[in-house]
Amino acid sequence: MYETILVEKLASRVGLIRLNRPQAMNALNATLMRELMNALKEHDAEPDIGCHVITGSEKAFAAGADIKEMATATPVSMLVGDPISVWDELKKIRKPVLAAVAGVCLGGGCELAMACDMIIAAENAKFGQPEINLGVIPGAGGTQRLTRIVGKAIAMEMVLNNRWLTAPEAAQFGLVNHVYSVETYLDEALKLAAEIASRAPIAIRIAKDCVNKTYEMTLNEGLEYERRSFHFLFSTDDQTEGMDAFVNKRPAQWKGQ
Ligand code: CAA
Image (cartoon, rainbow, N blue to C red; front, side, top):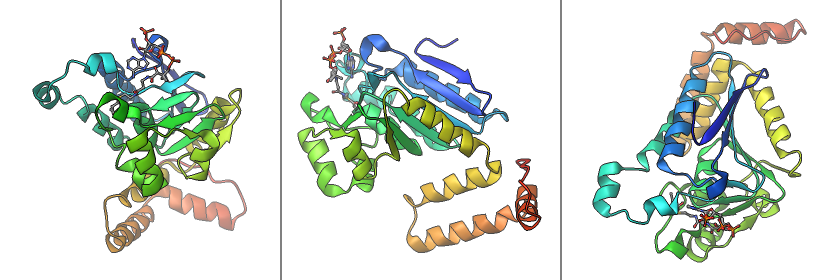
């Protein structure tokens, strides 16, 4: 069905999407980005899926936007075609999205991983924003999300001077959640995704939304937003079930209602 991605719905309620352009180190061309967003949207609407995982190959998560596709672009073609706008659709995905990253994770690849909710890395993962070598800058969040995550000093070095982070460095700077061997990183990411997918579905969505609001609100606005969201959850069956299960010392059965 898809040309540039492989899609699986796992029994563990995880939607797995593999970027699959091995001939181009999974460079993110327009077709891949459109297919990725379509698959994510389809899984997001699927009741049997509770968490998304995006991965690449052991060699490359993604080597960035497709340079060959971009090389002849003009300001007008960029403005009219607006190739980056498809990336904004990731922000509308309501279930958690994990990136399972091995190999190169560069430019748009790093930006894609950072737009996910968590990153699980293999020991061979390398994170970088090498756009400066092409005479441009990151165009899908690399100067913004990266700086918020790793801080100004490291972000400046990565964006201005093409410093790459190893997986342990990325963990040290808070860019990735966990680092595993190349043999196990995907299984570990799928395990974590399955655990998240087994939790109260409405609370999971609201929790993701509240954490992401940190980027857009002042502390007081965010605290108010969190409190309203917390109040709202008292209208769900899952809140009644979760608290009753705790009180009666039994496992909760979530309905997602
Ligand atoms: N776009 C298009 N094709 C790419 C690509 C990219 N980003 N990255 C790799 N490829 C292609 C190569 O052109 C090559 O194709 P051919 O065999 O047809 O020549 C193939 O993938 C394998 O690549 P290499 O031979 O270069 O493999 P390598 O192991 O020697 O090097 C690499 C791997 C370090 C990732 C190197 O390919 C590289 O530096 N790639 C470019 C990384 C980059 O600059 N990314 C930023 C893109 S701009 C961007 O992302 C903007 C944005 O913010 C949205």
